[in-house]
Length: 224
Image (cartoon, rainbow, N blue to C red; front, side, top):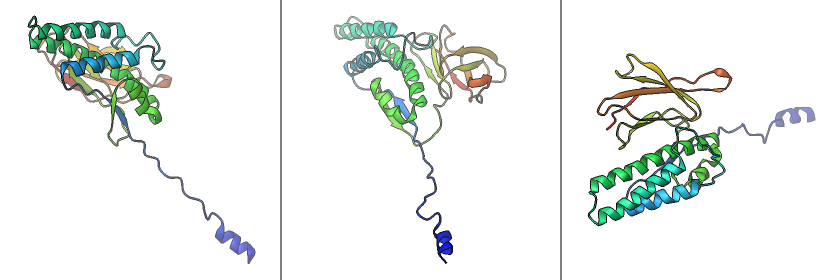
């Protein structure tokens, strides 16, 4: 009888492992408000990224350097003064603003890579770099996107996820394409392209052991 009771009670009090759902946290750059609010945000991010031990130097070559960001911040800052004095147009100041914006988008891609490598601390990583966050409730990596830059002939392309990527480029939506480039992160900065000509890109992650992730969808942009 005791053995029967022992068998009946065996396993009681034990719970099945619960499925843990990890919410994806995405870095966000809120580039709205006045010129003064934008220049302040850019300076905060530059300060937080300077000597940030999460991102040892040298940075990947496809990420805007702090030196270039600093130069563009100075240009933007001087432009705000010049526009107020009537020395340059608002349109010219908008271009200086968008150059800084493109720099920050490039850096944000590197920050997102660090977040995806340490999901539990993703929000802290973003905040330590000066970026806001937005949790979208999914588990997937960063999605392929293409951003138009105000720099003449330039585009910024995001691949799926972080880490090293291989890229293909097309002029006809992927009907024909060429193997184009390799990057150490999921960001491709495309420069010196013909204005008003649509370009398509796709990429795949380079994984450990010489294997590859799936190709992303084709994404397109038209440089100014």
